[in-house]
Image (cartoon, rainbow, N blue to C red; front, side):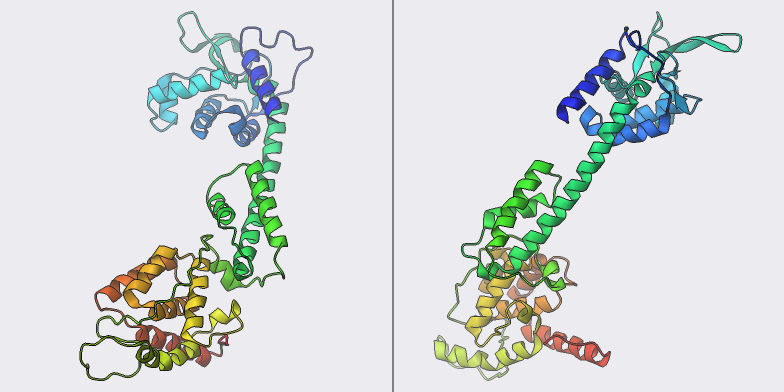
Length: 395
């Protein structure tokens, strides 16, 4: 394909020079100027021309009265002044316009028919055009077949790339859905896939990545569940889960996850046993309010240790970076931060940026403006409203 494009470009360039058309064995058919422009737009990358350059070509075509471009040399010459061209290009600076015109000539898409004084004009004899000086569009007709062939190949290539991107996105989601079954997790490959899906990538790189993820997916013990919530969650490939547990529950702004509120005692540090007793009741509140996590962890949660471990696995699946979650743990405490992750999962379809949302709540918690009880109460209220509207609450 590359060799063919180079051949066509060289042919167009040489054909636009003085010897253009002299060796043509027979007359070539004329082409519709807008059809060839459309084809050239699709083939533009192979010819090394930008869309700005093509807009200049389109403007040149508007100065050609006929719909068809003749293949004979000198049969499709346009001779607008720079001022007229600039006007039709919505005031494009002449220096910019000259640069694009030079690019069209350099690639052989058009050729110059210069007068002795380099002015653009035409001479008529009666009603017939005798000679014209300006830009000749005939190379487009001469090489129309090759341009259309490249455009068709580019269209097929675009379709193949679209299919590869869809496969890559699906494979990445499947692997993220089964992340707890992979050890070690292919973090580097998943991150490459995430970045690739966010930018334009050539077909070869996409094929290599799809092959790599296909191999990884083949090692999974069972096909993962393709849940719509997971498709929303699985946006990050940084799956470096953290199992670090904070043994002590950090209080903030005189608010505790415990339902019991009592007078402050002497300033002594809480023991592990006291901390555990203070969070037993709210754990039941959390589990009775949050249900979405069961779609990914059907075995359920039986302790705060299970909850924090589950939250650490959900964090990357929701597109939250680990440093953001660790900062939330530092400010709120491990149990409250983990509870908040489960609460966010209940509304993941409504939160545009889970990472930014968690960071904002951490900032509020730092100044005492956040209560996990309020979040849980809000979820319960939403579930009640859903039940009143005959919607099934997952559970």
